[in-house]
Length: 255
Image (cartoon, rainbow, N blue to C red; front, side):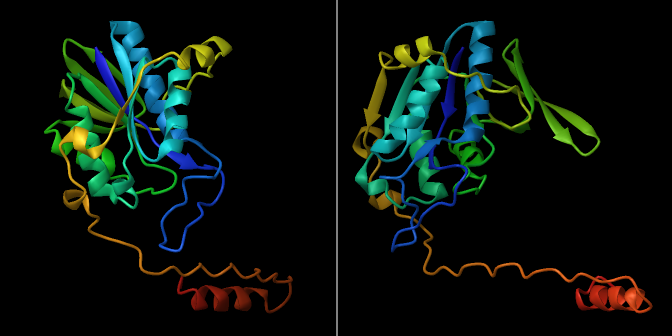
């Protein structure tokens, strides 16, 4: 089984992304890591190939620093990486990103594409499904568990009442949630072996794509910081307490 996992390098997942003068996320010269949500997809891919045999290939798009995301996934046990890096991709929107990733996936035979639900920096949650559409694949989203049997992908998707079981024939794409099995920690041996694993570098020309065709269809033209939350009001118990609470609820348009 050949599994492709879409991974992304994001600035400090626990911090607030820094924007430049063009309102684009600063990705170089800052601390960053493999997106935590993608680690669950890498773990799911590794478990599948441990059961069925095959290889896990990581695919990322981004500047030179994005190679750190590949190294983390390779140290976890993935077999190879593909890094699409091209200056023309700076500022790509979700659609352009999906087009690049789909073109890279299409270059080699595959059985399953896995991804996290959404990135911690962009949070659009649309790229994996767009990739599936471009590749004409069925997509099974929000998987907390997944398995493959007789050429069929089977996932469990959480719901308010429990979970749904969704099946799709391979090849297919699935997104994996944070409620899936915990990602493994890279061992020292895995970290050392990751340095020897193959990582293919691709530019737009290698994918048969042009910068003009990938020009973003949307851009940020301004930014306004959200207002800081004001301190709450402490209501002391007394004869007017109930009335004051009612008044506050009325002001908040709850009543």
